[in-house]
Length: 232
Image (cartoon, rainbow, N blue to C red):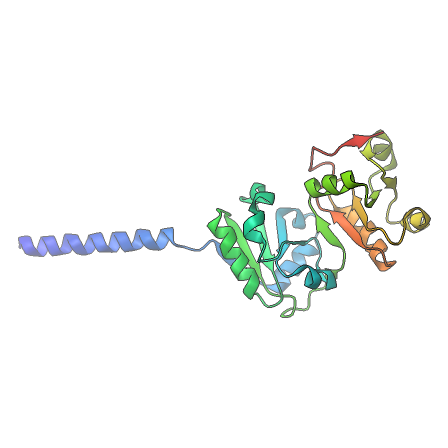
């Protein structure tokens, strides 16, 4: 009888250990359909809840990527974790061509403590309706690039807010007026756009890209990044 109880206790112990091990090893990586990501990228409010990383190489990204995606290649993401550490509790989506590199990137993010990770279907596997050539960056990067003086900058906020304070060298334009400002924007110089939250500025950037400019949009606007150096 005592042997039976001992065996039963050992068996229950093994079950509990196995159960705990399974819970602890449960992956935080979810799979996302192309349809789901496409819907998010088409919704200016919903997209604010997600941060999309295209993990392909820069030349692949430049050929076309889903709207609002930033580019951090799978070979660089391990060394650039510091750039996105503040997003550990946000929905982070990885995407590539077929889903393989993005899965690898998702596993790296999981290893570094990211909690809400989605591996989206690749751009060659789904007919995304939001493909664009407008590059996307974060607010910190915008300020760093603005400091170099090597880029044209367009402020797409309301004119009163532009007048109250804008980035050094920035001109004011909206999606409706940017075409009239082409004379002020050298065609051989990349143009960075920004606004309050990355929406208006993206529309401006799309028009610039269509006109042949290298267009870069800041996902973080003045409402989201508090360290812009604004001047009058």
